[in-house]
Image (cartoon, rainbow, N blue to C red; front, side, top):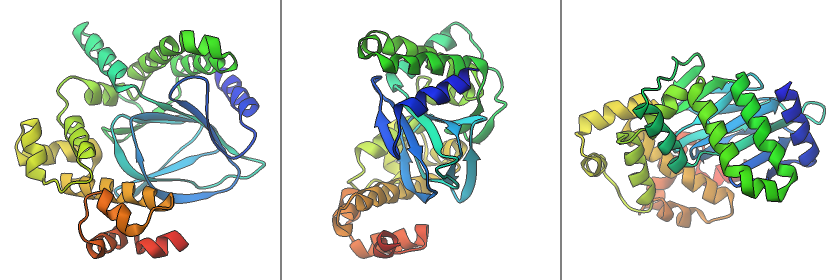
Length: 289
């Protein structure tokens, strides 16, 4: 019943295609009535729950679809391609995107660990330890409904929003994505630290040895942990993160050369070669497609 109520709340709030912010900080709802091809994006820690239709996520060449039965939990910055395979006015895509407050998630992860709380083994589909398709369970549905019900009253949203978000985060830890969340937000996670370092230095040349040294592990350990968390090697991840960020800037109207410089490329020709190698088209061909 909760899911039907959530769908009704979303339908009542958004009447046109696009994404709109709710009265609750970090919570957006979206609608699409036309298919959208997969395009490069960078997902920050977030939850995406679908109440009508389906979305796709492509990571390292593998395509994953999620719909009304599974929500997507991204626990760390991830360079992926995302799209909507099928949508129409009769069967629109409807859903909610919720940013994960890393401070609150870390507090919960530490508190749950200190009380010897053990998350159950994931029954969802683990794409990587940083990206999981988790089943909608009753606790997640109930917490999400309670959160979205605040949207009708700005005063309630301001007073109760943080508490309801914390309730939803707790439901995530207890559900199929709990293991992924615990790994990502527990104190001392090396991959999260390395990704944060990369994001802070995206416009500068960064080597794998620098990333490893900054977080205090060997190059070999960093490689192994990155593969476990993202399915990508550190070099592949770094390149995808830079190119996906550049693609979003270009899609927003920025010149190719400027976008290349802002993600650490000193050579536009090298940027174009690597862009085409990853996406199959040059930046200019990609824009005009």
